[in-house]
Amino acid sequence: MTKIVGLTGGIGSGKTTVARLFEALGVPIYIADEEAKTLMQNSKIIQQELIQLLGKSCYVDGQLNRSFIASKVFNDQSLLQKINAIVHPKVAEHFERWVSKQDAPYVIKEVAILFETKSQDQFDLIITVTAPTETRIQRVIDRDQKTKKDIESIIDNQLPESQKMSQSHFVIHNISLLETEINVQNIHEKILNKIKNS
Ligand code: ATP
Image 1: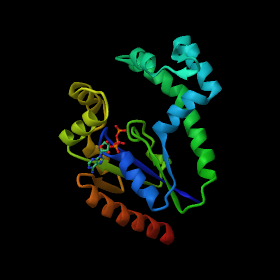
Image 2 (image 1 turned 45 degrees about the vertical axis):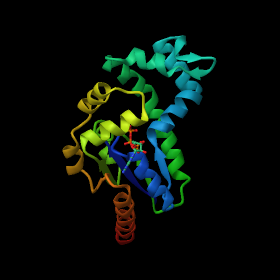
Image 3 (image 1 turned 180 degrees about the vertical axis):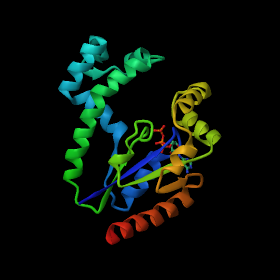
C-alpha cells in the first residue's frame, strides 16, 4: 500500500519548494492548502456551508472572496475553527480519493499545520522543513504583500520549530537550495529503503 509522508514546517520555511523537489523525483505530491482553496472555490457543498456561516459576500460572481473571508477571520479564532470544520473534512475525503489513485511507493502530503492539528497519526513518516526565522520572514516579505509584523504574528501562532523537529523522522534545513536538493535526494532514497525493508 502507498505510504503517506507528511511534509510540514513554519511559514516561509520552504515546504512547497521542497515538495516540488520530491515531485521532480517522481513522488506524487498533494499540497493541502492549495487543494483546500480549489475546493472552497469549486465544491457546491462547501459554498453552501460557507454562505450559511459568513453570508453571501464570501462569493462574488461565483468567485471566492478571499479578502472578505480574511477580514472576517482576522482576530476571530472561533470563526476560523468553524471554517476549518467545514473545509478540512472535505479536503481529507478528497485526499483519500486522490491517494487511492496513486501508483507509487509513497506520496507526500504538505500540511502547514500538521502538528498544530495533531494529525501525526495520519502519516507513516514526517519531514519538517526549517530555516532561520529572519530568513523565513524575508522570504515571505519578498513573496507576499505581508508586513514583518503580520508574519511575526503568524509565526507566534505556529508551534515552535524545535517541537516539530523532535517529532519528525527527517528534518531539512532549507537554506542553500543546492544543499536542500541533495538532502531531498538522500531522504528519498532512505524512504524507499525503509519501505522496501518494512
Ligand atoms: P508558506 O507556509 O508561506 O506557504 P512555504 O513553507 O511553502 O511557505 P515556499 O513557498 O516553498 O515556503 O518558499 C517561500 C519563498 O521562499 C518562495 O518564494 C521560495 O521561492 C523561496 N525559497 C524557498 N526555499 C528557498 C531557498 N533555499 N533559497 C532561496 N529562496 C527560497
